Length: 254
Image 1 (cartoon, rainbow, N blue to C red):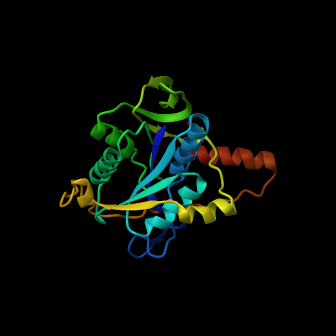
Image 2 (image 1 turned 90 degrees about the horizontal axis):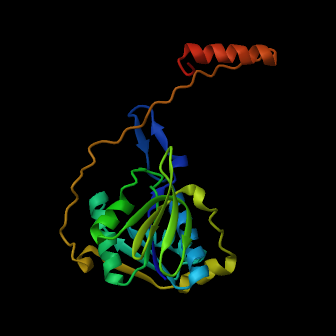
């Protein structure tokens, strides 16, 4: 199997603070990491490779410092990395186009694995857009996968419904966080990742030089989350009753 895992470098959203005077999120100095659900996609790629053999390539669209994040997935078990340098204001259209062109450049890819969404924007657009650009099937929101030589089966979480779907190859699959528990690389794997190939492509290498994003970010604001900080110190039964009354008055319960 020739597998591509599309991963995104994101800010650690748990470290984001909001400037109270401007209501803007403070992003400077926040550590970067691979989006959590992309690691689930990586783990699933490794399991498929362990079963069927093959090669795993990690592909990222991002700035030069994303090299270090790619190395994390190389340490997990990927065989090769590709970093596509894109403009700082790249939107979902441009990112998905770049990934699709990168996959086409590789040739003969069987499975493209993505997280269902990135933890920073959580739009869920990139996987389906890649499938659209490549004109191949897609299986979204997979929480269980069973890959065989000729087809792949996915149990998919569609909200209030569970759907079982099958597809032949090539196919794009987006996975949910519930699909697995990503492995932690050993020290030897971390050291060995430095010797694995990591290619860098520019937009011009993919025939996309000069292509502009179609969506412009106008503003980014934090959301005020004021807490009432009500503490109940009475007898447990009385505290439970008082809490229920308060929740009803706030409209939280019916």
